[in-house]
Length: 66
Image: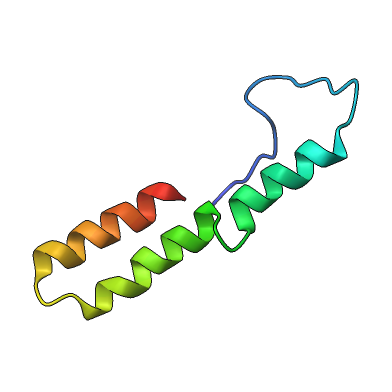
């Protein structure tokens, strides 16, 4: 039913690694103030909203970040 092909859109050749930069990038995505945490906060806050307009807004924001 589904087919998953693991390939990159553009070829990438890594010549020099930079562990410090990699740590910063990982922290921005998955850290306590990262993108994933922000999207999860939006998605959980939608359940406390009083009307459907703000619920929809928080859902749109939370799903567009990730």
